[in-house]
Amino acid sequence: MAFLLVPVLVLLGLAAVLVMWGIGVYNGLVAARNRVKESWAQVDVQLKRRFDLIPNLIETVKGYMQHERATLEAVTAARAAVGGAGTQAQRLEAESGLTAALGRLFAVSEAYPDLKASANFASLQEELASTENKIGFARQFYNETVMNLNNKVQMFPGNIIAGMFHFGAETFFEVKDEAQREAPKVSFS
Amino acid sequence: MWEQIAANRRKSFLLVMSAALLLGLLGWAGGEYFLGKGGGAGGVLVALVVWLVMTLAAWFQGDGIMLSVAGAHRVQKDDFPQLFNIVEEMTLAAGLGRMPAVYVIDDPAPNAFATGRKPENAAVAVTSGLLRTLDRDELQGVVAHEMAHVRNRDIQLMLFAGVLAGAIVILAETGLRGMWMGGGRSRSRREGGADGNGLAALLAIVLMILAPILAQLIYFAVSRRREYLADASAASFTRYPEGLASALEKISLAPQRLGGATSATAPMYIINPLKRAGQAAANATGTHPPIDERVRILRAMGGAGFVDYDRSYREVTGRGGVVPKSALAGDGAQAPAARPAPDRPAPSTRENARQVDDFFYRKGGYRTVACACGTTLRIPPDFATPSAKCPRCGTMHDLR
Image (tube, rainbow over all chains, first blue to last red; front, side, top):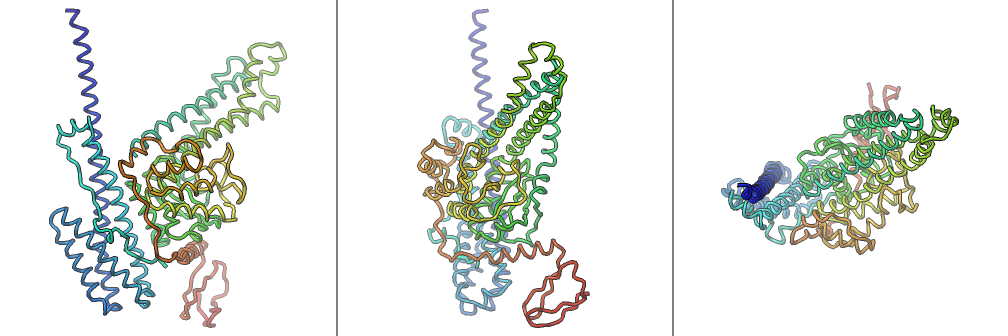
């Protein structure tokens, strides 16, 4: 029996190493997936904040911008689209639309000196511009965590473990249109 | 990126261990010298106690001590909305769970630092001079650099490294002073006849002279590398290297010298606060890399990824890479592109300057009275007269 002992021990040792490796990879995958969830929650918080700021903005600018009804309605409509979005993909589409509509609103607001002089508008503008930045930065970090997860899920040999436990790749939050990618033109002066 | 944090933790540990070894050696030599043959163990004990006390103090009070030495005041969002927004933005970009506390130092020299033992209780401090001189993009670059120190666990490393270096300096100074005073039981023994103690004495002297220098070198070597890495991270957070580059340029050109900085706290600032403007900053004991080099690297990046920073670093300095492989791999197949320069006019810093004034006048106990003509009167706390006249329109204001 002694002659069997050595190969059996070696095999057992190899199996143990393999299991340890599998546990490490699995835990790494779970950590990566949790990071994606966490970072998405951050994006979500900022998107909601923007959603809540808009009625206040519309109320403030309405009196000054009588001739820009179309621009204001576009913002309201884009906000309603966000509220009515069902799936995640629709939601992201609608959020991009809202970013673009807000960008146009701030662009045309440059032509209204009375509006720009209003203290209420100035502080609201810094808040919205910063919220826009925060969405951008939270999105940037979210995409980083998604790439980290996707690398782990798709690269060999980790993909074997990922396949066994049904870890899937996540989708990036991209801003599609090149015009929308531009941050809204907001002046801080 | 997470691998980078783990690597930093390992390095922290290694550094602390090697410095602790140096400390122990110093303690042993000192013990042999002062307590006589076989007193090494006692010396090591003394060294360990000194270090332990200092480490505990740093662990529980380190950030508080650092902030109070610098004269920093905690501020809230209502005091500095823009600064607060920027810190929040960079917290998101760095993916930190919690926003660091924000502090402002009343000092005309533009500078900034981050401190704290964990990202969860970190603090970011900027001087009022920084708020007065930098526009929003530049301020964002500086805050991003500090946030990188928080995210990469540099603040923790610097805290421990600083404490160890400090303990070694204290022990060596005390030891050397004791020797000049002719202390130690060893003197009588040494006169009695040469034995192993003579060697211990020699070793003690050499160590006491060399150890502080070695400790400072370890400390500085670590801190310089961190600065490059924090610059690289700042560029990748903001996607706008030019913001930090132009901020560094403005800070380095400012003629003021920071008041509340010492050689122990200097490595924590974004720019070495102890260097005079125009003085050559590059040498072996410099805590910070030369500023013009940092600016040139940032401006030659092209993109905004770690890969771009590493390539630019090689080109500008002619030295090997500075970014760890794990961080380079984090960029993936495509390094993030840099944001184009904004086409809006340079934002004014007037609003920030006004907030700085408001905040510190309020801190100083000043009262503000708004006059109908648009002038704001600031009334000093020791103003005895019951009424004040507006200098512009002559209206009398009742102050009671």
